[in-house]
Structures are given as C-alpha cells and as structure tokens.
Image 1: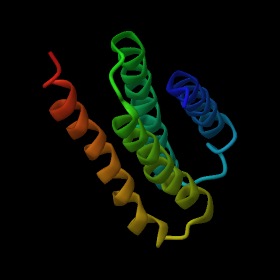
Image 2: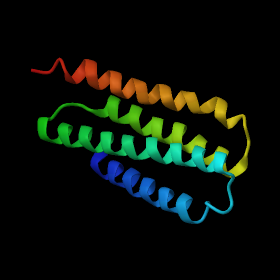
Image 3: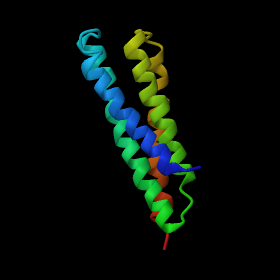
Length: 120
C-alpha cells in the first residue's frame, strides 16, 4: 500500500473539510456543532501529518510501518468521520462511536513509541 499517497489524500481531505466547515457550514450549524466539526478537522489534519511522517520514515528506513499507519488511518476515519457525521446529522449515538477512533489514534502513537524506538 502506498502510505505516502494515502497521507496526501488524508491531508487534502482535511484541508477541504476544514474549508467546507468554515465557509459552507458556518451559517448552517450551531456554534456547538461547528466546534464538533472543527475538532474532527483538527484531529484529521494532525494525524494526516503523523501518517505522512511515518510513511516517509518507512520509505527511508525500510521499516514496516503498516500497523502504525493503519491505526492512524482508522483513527481518522472513525474519530473524525463520526464527528463530521454527528455535526451534520445531530444523531447523538455517533458520539458513542467516536472514542473508538481515539483508541486507534492512541494505538498508533503507542505502536510508534514501542516499535520504532527499539529499532537500531
């Protein structure tokens, strides 16, 4: 899998969704729901950059970064995705799924700290 391309797509979508929220949704969402949207964008972009850094490291070192990269990608999809959906629909049960995405983010950072720090 080309993780650099995936990171690029994640970054592109994060910027596009941030702009969409700032311009198209500002007048349509309550301030609370816009804040939820923006939290999704923030975590989306932070982890797109983390995915890019991890991808570049893997390419340069030959390290197998797939587990960490997959954790970050799943975190973006689940954490940010449910926050986007919650903002647009108001379906509160989606908020119960969001922490699962946070767990994937934590797994990604934990994997990075444990696996890559032990490399020679």
